[in-house]
Amino acid sequence: MEKDQAEERTNHRRQKVTYYALFPAILCPFCLFFSYGYSIGTISSAVLPLRDFYRQTYQERYNATIDEATLDVLWALTATFYPLGGVFGAPTVPWLVRKFGRKKSLLLVQPICIVATLLLSLSEVIKSFETLMIGRFLLGIVGAIGTGITPMYISEISASHIRGIIGSLCTVSVVFGNLIGNVLGLKQVLGTSADWPYLLAITGIPSVIFIMYSPWLPTSPRVLYFDMGKYEETEKVLKRLRGSDDVELEIKSFEEEAKQSSKESVMSIFEVIKAKRVRWQMISVIVLMSSNQFSGINGIQFYLDRVFITAGIPPDLIDYVKLGVLVAQLIVTALAGLFCERFGRKSLLLFGDAMICVSIIVYTLMTAFQDQVDWFPYISVVASLGIICGVCIGPSLVYVIAPELLDQSSRPAIMTLGVLVLWIAFAIVTFATPYMFDALKFAVFLPFFAFMLVTLIYTFIVIPETKGKSLIDIQTIFGKRNKVSVITTLDNHSKQTVHHNLAYEGDVVTRSKSL
View 1: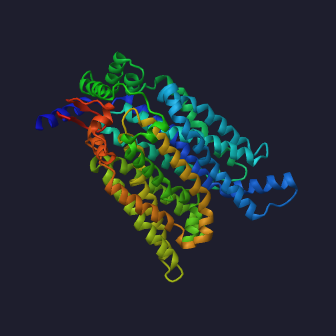
View 2: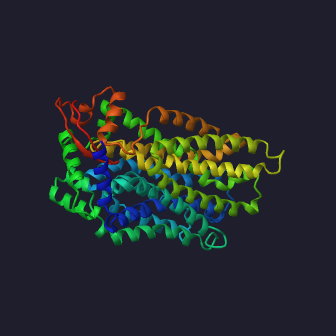
View 3: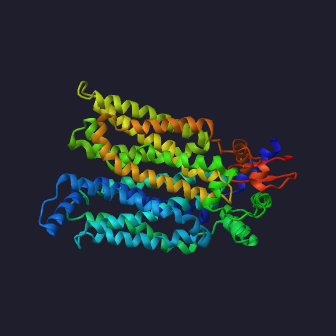
């Protein structure tokens, strides 16, 4: 065992963090996830000038004043059209992955983002809020495809010892985009009736950057090996990505995985739903993905002003409090990526879920009794920050841990199901949150508390720690719950002795088993 661990440490030292791997691993989350966060931030910060645009357009079109109830519905629909686009975009991921591969699929959606940006920025010129909704719908399609493919792609090109940190860049990019959207959306910057089209026009800049750099993006070595059968090219790409000629262990892991899977083809969504061998993996990814939204995070992000108004914060302080919360969120998200490799994925998931539950209880109590104690509203702000940071520490790690729970054949389909559930939950939370504020008042977050408590218990009982575990280790754990042996999980009914020397996804593990 000591010899194996020494070999593992030596392999990590040999794997350099190369520009060829690092820059694409940073660029892809920035270009695909930044617009996700930016779309949330701009709608949250520029709400007043955009609602004025709706009033003015309605007045000019119908020669009548729009009532507030109708305006509220139109605004809720505008916010919801983004995740609704995601619901339609998510199911296309397996087809895109099979047809074009990871890299080319990400490239193909960038023109859609540019078209969506044009619709957003020109909606004021053509006096059409419907154009704004359509633009957000198209952005949602791009966002869903990006959230479905990007985590797989960057996980597959990154060295194992930095995979957790690189995976966390997806969440960091969302938070950074949200922060930039809120800063630029201030009335002192671009959040005015004259300038909001320029604010929305910035959405497409990351897509232009992605298209310009795309010729230098590496193809995933796993796609080259498993899907394209280009074994020599796989070795060449791995050597460039790892900055070392010693990639023998990683190649052996591919060979062993290919042997055990008997060159099984990529599973469809219907196949993974019916397959007993991946049932608990599928359920786990769906639970984790849905918790990312049913934590209430995007209900809070879209309607952060209302969260603070309900908490009793003076309106003239809300912009500054909001920016402070978002800066703190960015710092916590960045630190969570570093802690991910140190403390493990499951530990942070549990801590984050527990933090959300406690913060919701504190927010509810402080808001309920805010009239009795002067400083209770500020405790409510801290509790709101606790909810947001809890999501950054826990549920947002789904982009790191979900691909690690899955083998090569089931990963695209199960990730698609998970992302689809995420965007459906996103749409529900976004549309329902303003009406929940009206109906539940200070208790608005209690339904999210119930869901996160269930998620916390499920994670503790079912989700395995993936840090330091090989693919076979993880699939063996799930095999017991699925009541399927690891032979069936990886070899489709092969009954033979398997001796493996596997380096995959987490750290390198060397052992021999007789199954």
